[in-house]
Amino acid sequence: MFLSDKKLEVQMSRSIRLLNLLQHLREAKYPVTSQTLAAQLGISQRSVYRDIETLRQQGVRIDACAGMGFQLKEDFFLPPITLNETEVEAIFLALHWLKSVPDGELQCASSSVLTKLNSVLPAHRQHLLEQTTLRAFNVWLPVDMKILEQIRMAIRRQVKISVMYWDEQQRESHRILWPFAMGYFNDKIMLAAWCELRQAFRNFRIDRIQQLHLSQEIYPQFKQKLFHQWWTQEVCSTTDKN
Image 1 (tube, helix red, strand yellow):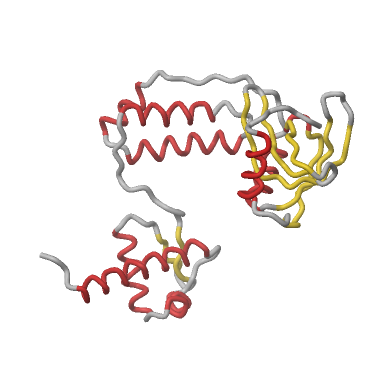
Image 2 (cartoon, one colour):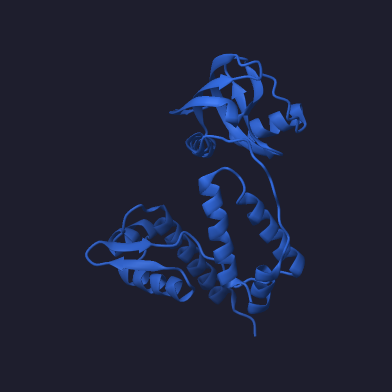
């Protein structure tokens, strides 16, 4: 039996409303009252309560804070998924390799992702994840974890950074950079950025960055566009041209 056009329209409208509600909760840093949510979505408070209960039934964790409102406790959730043996091995190998990267937050994230995947995989796939013996090994040049964290933050926010850099001739220079990508090559981590000093793209070894200041100034290009231009020009070159 097919749904009538009117019923289908109502169903789609409610689905969109649920997605909008989820987005409002995701963007809120603090608990939001049902009254505020109702005003934002243009619906009644009763509908807000009903929609929140629907989201909870679908697995979304929404806490109710007495006198304060609702707060999303999980940013998103994965439904039960099925992966074949090769896909499970690929995920495990990639996450195991990530544990060797000298970046504390990424190491923690890799362990967290493995735990979350294991919780939603069917039992026979969980066994495969536990039994796989594929491993990845890397020896990395030491880097400053704080600098790595700041660079990743700058790339996300698309803001400029100021660095003190030592090139391979041990010459020190001060650079204002527009960071847009990081690459992990053999034993080193590279930063791809537009350099205001050279007025050109440059690749920087992160282990040679001595000091870094994270600014609040957004650089005047989208990082995806910079990446595309750099990719076309460099063709994945890892030469340090500084």
